[in-house]
Image (cartoon, rainbow, N blue to C red):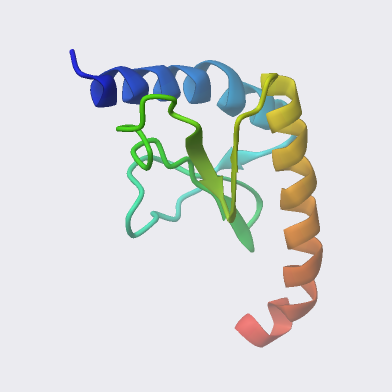
Length: 106
Protein backbone atom coordinates (compact mmCIF):
# COMPACT_ATOMS: atom_id res chain seq x y z
CA UNK A 1 0.00 0.00 0.00
CA UNK A 2 1.37 3.45 -0.86
CA UNK A 3 1.50 6.52 1.41
CA UNK A 4 -1.52 8.16 -0.23
CA UNK A 5 -3.75 5.14 0.38
CA UNK A 6 -2.55 4.84 3.97
CA UNK A 7 -3.18 8.55 4.67
CA UNK A 8 -6.68 8.37 3.16
CA UNK A 9 -7.60 5.34 5.29
CA UNK A 10 -6.14 7.01 8.39
CA UNK A 11 -7.98 10.28 7.75
CA UNK A 12 -11.30 8.53 7.10
CA UNK A 13 -10.88 6.61 10.36
CA UNK A 14 -10.27 9.79 12.36
CA UNK A 15 -13.19 11.59 10.74
CA UNK A 16 -15.64 8.71 11.10
CA UNK A 17 -14.41 7.54 14.50
CA UNK A 18 -13.91 10.90 16.17
CA UNK A 19 -15.02 14.08 14.45
CA UNK A 20 -18.41 12.99 13.13
CA UNK A 21 -19.48 11.51 16.48
CA UNK A 22 -18.23 14.49 18.47
CA UNK A 23 -19.85 17.01 16.12
CA UNK A 24 -23.17 15.16 16.26
CA UNK A 25 -22.94 15.46 20.05
CA UNK A 26 -22.55 19.21 19.50
CA UNK A 27 -25.87 19.31 17.58
CA UNK A 28 -24.43 19.01 14.09
CA UNK A 29 -26.56 17.06 11.62
CA UNK A 30 -25.86 15.38 8.30
CA UNK A 31 -26.07 17.88 5.45
CA UNK A 32 -28.11 17.13 2.33
CA UNK A 33 -25.88 19.53 0.37
CA UNK A 34 -23.15 17.96 -1.79
CA UNK A 35 -19.79 19.68 -2.17
CA UNK A 36 -18.71 20.13 -5.81
CA UNK A 37 -15.19 18.75 -5.32
CA UNK A 38 -15.13 16.90 -1.98
CA UNK A 39 -16.64 13.42 -1.82
CA UNK A 40 -18.67 12.40 1.19
CA UNK A 41 -21.33 13.93 3.35
CA UNK A 42 -21.05 17.22 5.16
CA UNK A 43 -22.31 18.31 8.55
CA UNK A 44 -24.20 21.42 9.63
CA UNK A 45 -25.84 23.10 12.58
CA UNK A 46 -27.83 25.40 10.32
CA UNK A 47 -28.60 25.47 6.62
CA UNK A 48 -26.29 28.47 6.18
CA UNK A 49 -22.94 26.79 6.81
CA UNK A 50 -21.82 23.25 6.01
CA UNK A 51 -18.61 21.45 6.97
CA UNK A 52 -16.95 19.03 4.56
CA UNK A 53 -13.86 16.98 5.34
CA UNK A 54 -11.28 16.99 2.56
CA UNK A 55 -9.61 13.61 2.90
CA UNK A 56 -7.61 13.63 -0.32
CA UNK A 57 -5.82 17.02 -0.28
CA UNK A 58 -2.33 16.42 1.03
CA UNK A 59 -2.81 12.66 1.33
CA UNK A 60 0.30 12.19 -0.79
CA UNK A 61 2.45 14.16 1.70
CA UNK A 62 4.57 11.93 3.93
CA UNK A 63 3.62 13.89 7.06
CA UNK A 64 -0.05 14.24 6.03
CA UNK A 65 -0.40 17.50 7.92
CA UNK A 66 -3.13 19.16 5.85
CA UNK A 67 -5.99 16.81 6.42
CA UNK A 68 -9.25 18.66 6.56
CA UNK A 69 -10.82 21.85 5.34
CA UNK A 70 -13.69 23.68 6.97
CA UNK A 71 -13.34 27.03 5.26
CA UNK A 72 -10.04 27.32 7.12
CA UNK A 73 -7.20 24.86 6.62
CA UNK A 74 -5.96 23.50 9.91
CA UNK A 75 -3.20 21.04 10.49
CA UNK A 76 -0.46 19.86 12.82
CA UNK A 77 -2.76 19.50 15.81
CA UNK A 78 -1.26 17.57 18.68
CA UNK A 79 -4.64 16.60 20.16
CA UNK A 80 -7.88 15.79 18.36
CA UNK A 81 -9.83 17.59 21.08
CA UNK A 82 -8.00 20.83 20.18
CA UNK A 83 -8.94 20.36 16.53
CA UNK A 84 -12.57 19.74 17.50
CA UNK A 85 -12.64 22.88 19.64
CA UNK A 86 -11.07 24.89 16.80
CA UNK A 87 -13.66 23.55 14.36
CA UNK A 88 -16.57 24.39 16.65
CA UNK A 89 -15.27 27.90 17.39
CA UNK A 90 -14.62 28.68 13.72
CA UNK A 91 -18.03 27.29 12.70
CA UNK A 92 -19.78 29.55 15.21
CA UNK A 93 -17.62 32.51 14.19
CA UNK A 94 -18.37 32.04 10.49
CA UNK A 95 -22.04 31.40 11.17
CA UNK A 96 -22.35 34.65 13.14
CA UNK A 97 -20.95 36.50 10.10
CA UNK A 98 -23.22 34.75 7.58
CA UNK A 99 -26.45 34.73 9.60
CA UNK A 100 -27.13 38.50 9.21
CA UNK A 101 -26.87 38.01 5.43
CA UNK A 102 -29.46 35.22 5.33
CA UNK A 103 -32.24 37.60 4.23
CA UNK A 104 -30.14 38.55 1.17
CA UNK A 105 -29.72 34.89 0.18
CA UNK A 106 -33.45 34.12 0.01
